[in-house]
Image (cartoon, rainbow, N blue to C red):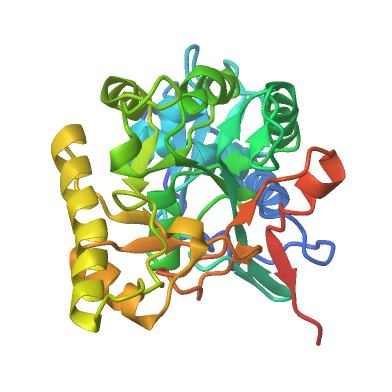
Length: 360
């Protein structure tokens, strides 16, 4: 019997989706392990169906496609980011490709599976749901004796821990999309934020984050920018923004928005907090060429009045300093955020809860 060679994808009919395919597994088996099992089943099925018909797999790298996924032979120079850009339309979704393939090396000749459909956007499983921690930093130095000041070597050690333990640092807007049920996030997603606008965020934190391939959201109060040698400048913020960092509002002067001053009537109070939120947003929009939708409440404090003004001003996501992680049903204008104040690793790791188990 003569073999048939084809360079087009082999279509074998509709296979079950990754989520519905029944795979013997441990309880709460990690998603990437399930997908590796799926990949093994797909490849076995291809071999079983193709060989009896004497059909050989074509020379093209994409040799199977369904509505749910592609089975792809990796070429020289392929990376998860390049495959994500080609098949998913966004290189920032590289983690989707990486998580789908577990420990498969992205080297020439290896086989990878690329999911095409939107997955479990809420992070729900049979035994619980995904949680996303937001970490909060302020200053970085060895010389300042304050719990808000993180020594550079400790910060480096914390970032190294995230990298070596397969945490994925995502942006604040990535988190917002997850909370709005627009897309899923990596199973061990975490957001990093840096408040106020100290120069050490640029001099110290920025190169350390770049070293590990991470970004952060910078929450800036605009009166402080360029105000002293300890403050970040607009050019430095622009540079960090070009590197993938995001910049959010922190009001103009870092006033507690919930406190009405002595002798201040209700109308004057509302005017002041509207100015603090609105003017700072306008300045950030103009100086950085963006639409500022991210906000950190000064001191993490807010009330119903502050929430109404923030939403009316155009902020779509706001963070507090209430310790904890955030599920898909969290209030997008009052997200929990853990301040990293202690320097020991046990305390740091305790802030990295990425899954909540529900007891039955």
